[in-house]
Figure 1 (cartoon, helix red, strand yellow):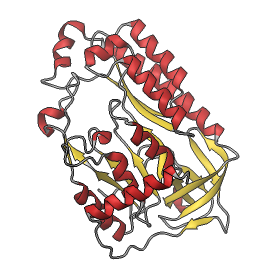
Figure 2 (cartoon, rainbow, N blue to C red):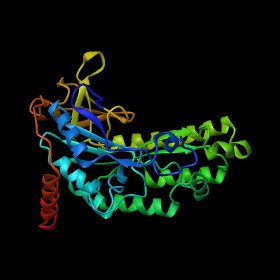
Figure 3 (tube, rainbow, N blue to C red):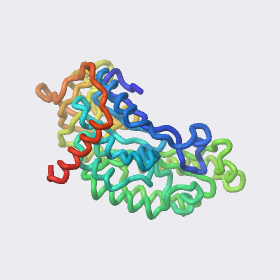
Figure 4 (cartoon, helix red, strand yellow):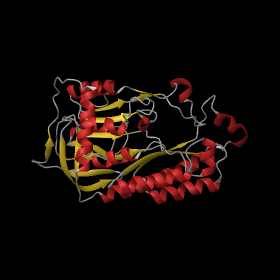
Length: 341
């Protein structure tokens, strides 16, 4: 799905969901998890490249589960797909959105850390951290989640974590809420969203609401407290970027046509923050911008003449990648890693 004029796209790699989170109705209408075939994904990626795309944002209900339903005859997993997508010369950025906490294999973590084109940005909706609430939500246990986040931070230098939380879930106590507050402070999420719980008809959580529902004003107060905390952390992260030179992809002209706006590798299009540049560049251009200030969560950069890394892609006709070519790409990548390259 194209989400900008030309240069960025969401690429869906799977449909459906096997999980039974008590607040979510998606499995009831999207069905079980089904990975899109490798050849189909590569064909679509090639078509996007041919039309000028240089940035791929991989999405699914559980993106990092890709390939786990292929069976014993096809061992390819998301790490293999990342190596192959990164071989497309026109692609400059690959981001992972909507990852589930349970499917981060050692190979996937290594791929995110080692492949230059894969942004050190991972979106993992966690929903909560109190074990009481996680159990009621039917989500992965607290200990697993905490250990995973620590591992990701240790293994992927410069990692930016994005997540979402639900507050005011039926039965959530003051202690549960305070535990979530402490967790957010400890983890210092650079990107996050917070939502007050809202019933979805036909879900187990909707039944819980009858006896254990949280008053709307309490849900909203808890949401506002968490959002204020998240915004403080985002502002702190923005301030930490001042003085750095960062790669920025230009998305379009700035306000009232002045200058340009773009994004760093820590920002997904239409979701996260932006960089304001005084210079005017064409959408799809990549520039090295020195960050000189921040405007709340957004950055202000300077990219004078000579800062262009890559001009916008005009697109061209390309061939698809066969399964055998894909296997060769992965083998070359693995061999390079073993050699220390």
